[in-house]
Length: 279
Image 1 (cartoon, helix red, strand yellow):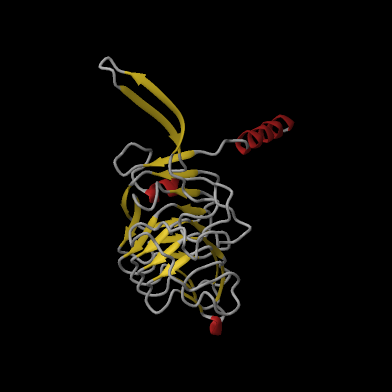
Image 2: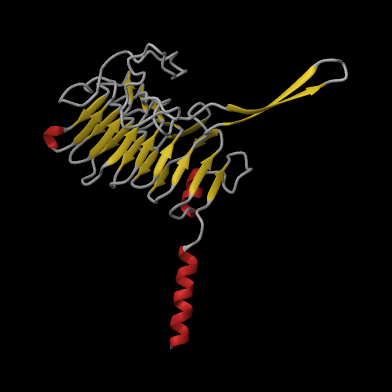
């Protein structure tokens, strides 16, 4: 009996120290999975799921403590004809474009889901929606645009905390908390209609001055520039911006770390550069 108990303890210690995995999803077949939903089904807590560029037509559910990372909203898209496209009750999702042709882009439940630096756009209903009692998701540095209903809505007794978000061109309004029925939408340092009401700290309702409808960088004169939550910094150490290209999870374009100059036989030179980026 003593020997059996000792073996059991050793087994528990061994399994508890397993390292977290990085799982790659590539719709073209170079990863372990070709769909995000398959990767999520096989994921365990602590995993990071890295999604390569592509248009993923599927409905996904994130209900584990995992991080789902896209390769940038410009190239990594999740879209479905189902309602919603993304269910999240735990874990984190970032760096995607998310849309739904029949309902909400994202529905939240649970108390730990985080939606960071995503573009939720072109949904038939809301960009982000909850009506689940006890839910308390966080939406950080997202852009919510061109959705048929609200950019973010907390209905019934659901709760959403949003900071550093920009919501524009959404159906009846950009932000809505159904306070009459117990819905709670906590906004701070956001830009959009209804954002600056009810004493929400640091919120505005102004033109964010995107470069264009497809390029969601904000110009330096934008009222959203350096006007995000002061407790959050951009990767360069400056005060955080509102919107997709702001906050600590802001995607960084490649920064050159090394340059190699190679003389060529014809007298010209070849320059090779290496760099790093968040994507």
